[in-house]
Length: 225
Image (cartoon, rainbow, N blue to C red; front, side, top):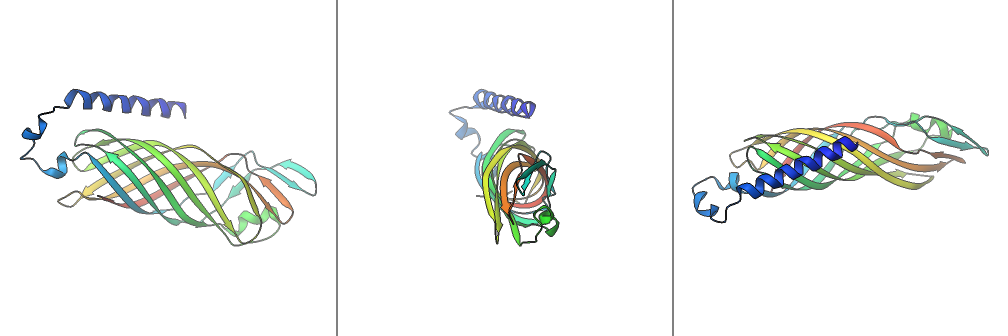
């Protein structure tokens, strides 16, 4: 994780250096005849995506039942969910840029087998709220972002208590393609790891998850404003 953070800092430094070297206060006169969509650098984007979030493995979980606490690997199994995100993006053709934003997986249905350790079955949904920062390299239409995220779980359940929710640093990478004459829309394929923890009390059983990690693949439609 430290290597990813250092890499992002290096990429951002390189981008700032390029911006400083190429900025020209008289540039307005030289680009007047160019396509305005190719010279605009800052955008707000909104995305709608389908995320297949995989099993989340908590390898160092502790389960307390009947006054006895024992270590036990816990796997939270979920189904796909739609999600939305909003980002500020700075980029130009054939150069490095960056994106800063937030995302929300609206609700992954929790599978019944996830409740085996509690000795019961409940209807539950896992929502994910997170914040991310990415470095992006853009060609004319293709682009590749890579970055880090912090994800927090929101477990919605018909009974039981959720406590000690915490988010940790994960990472993501994607590939996108800008389409249309104005390049104001894109299709994006994403991979993301999400790391978080929580404590769940249900049916007189307490599961303290410690930190766990899950992988997800998503297909997104993105619009630029």
